[in-house]
Amino acid sequence: MSIAAPRFFDRRPIFQSGLAITLFLSGVAVLSSIPGATRALADDDGVEFTPGNLLLSRSVYDNNPANVVAGVTLLPPGCVAPNCVTAVADGSYPTIWNNEAADASFGITSKIVLDQISPSGELINSLEVPNSGPSKDQMVTSFPSKSEIALNLSTDGRVVTFMGYLAPVDALDVSNSNTPAVVDPTNPVPGSFSRVVAEIDAHGQFRFTKTNAYSGNNGRAAIKNDKAGVIYTAGNAGNGGNPQPNGIIIGAGAQILTAERKPLAAQDPGLPTPVGSFNITQLGQKADKVGKDTNFRGLTIFNDVVYTTKGSGSNGVNTVYFIDTTGFDANGKPLACPNGVGVPGAGAKLPTTPIFYDAAQLQTGGVVPYNMCILKGFPTTLAKNATAFPFGVWFADAKTLYVTDEGNGTTTFDPASGKFTAAAAQTGAGLQKWVFDSTSGAWKLAYVLQAGLNLGVPYTIKDYPTGSNPKTGLPWSPASDGLRNITGRVNRNGTATIWAITSTVSGNTDTGADPNQLVRITDNLAATSLPAGESFTTLRTARFAEVLRGVSFTPGTDRDHIADEHGDDRDHDHDRDHDRDRDRHAEAD
Image (cartoon, rainbow, N blue to C red):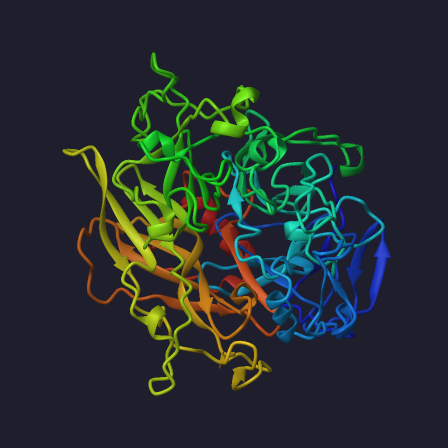
């Protein structure tokens, strides 16, 4: 169902508790009194995104101390002994995350804001996703969940999609809750909330699709196949014991949904519908926890093939995967990878239906048949021994693939140097450039771009606490540890420009709640060894009680014609003349 009146701002809004007067018009909340917002266009039908601009997702926590009461609030909400603990900190940011030391599932939901920015990072306007209002078509994110609200342009460029929850703002432990149709009795979080895919078009109109996938964990990314009317998603499931219920196993990893047009309240999605499945037994390894080899997060589509990544958890393999749609051999193995590793076959097409799995094998083998492969050349080392932590993926062309590595999250700190030394010493974290070797038929790592990320070097956030967190004994100030979600553009001068969201290390009990950064770099597309002088530029640093999550081009952008005319990221007085900028991008197309 379309939502015609989301919150819209002409300038960058400042969100602080008590500063906004909230009105409800036409079923959607409108912020009417926010410093920095020159006007609220609640009923404006002319909300437009300009093709070629960027869309940035962020979340803002309301910093209300009363959200949690130390020594009183029982966690998780609705818990049953012996799974109950008492909160150790109130709802004040950032100390609220110290509750994770007591409740491993701790999190709190928050609003999602979409910023339209120029390629050089200048804010044009902001749009708040409907939440906690009279309208039932709405969604939120879990503020500290670092892998959520990735943004992806649809196959035809018509919409941008992302994932969240059908829940109110300030709900606790939602990211580890069950979904309504898939309840795990061993999950210590007894609450139940649907996961939701949002799609937004070039006019700022929303549609939402509900799913029962990712029970016990979170949906992370979504891409809509416009022609087929389906949505591919990536995420993780399960927060309980082993063995996991069948609904958890089929609700993990790569899913396919039918894009809905009905209101959320009228939707009945039923059981999850997996579209991709991988098991380490394909590599000749001994099986591990069923349903956890597909703990996916990054997601992209290139040449009609769905790619995803795994970079966390102790099961499976941290690497880059693809869904093989070319069929199976006589032994029931994917044609593209009989031994679990391969490259997409000729004639591969995007999937349009879920896997027809064998329910009798779910508890022993997971979702069978397996139809996913590790992309040849990428790591096959088991995650428990991994040194790679891939996240975002972007193809510049058929022979050039950029993959982000978010870093290992180790928080070793050296007071003498003032650095998080483990983060600073990493060689694989940052932006990896992979090139395809036609001779070997495999991808090879060319180099890793790190300059300008200042890995391990703390930076300052206004109003953030100084000194160390008593819970961890480490400095509050965050430092970059690597990169997460990305998007990119091939320029006409033979370079590629990539935008990325940083990951962090800090003394925060949950570093996913750290204020992080949006960065940009331009790379010589033909280079196969690290070019001199290439360095990341920081375009945006999240503020107090704010996190940055996803980046994509705006809905309405032609995916196949986004090359910059100049290749130097100039905005040509974009903010002074929006119409001229729109014309420039139209000419580039």
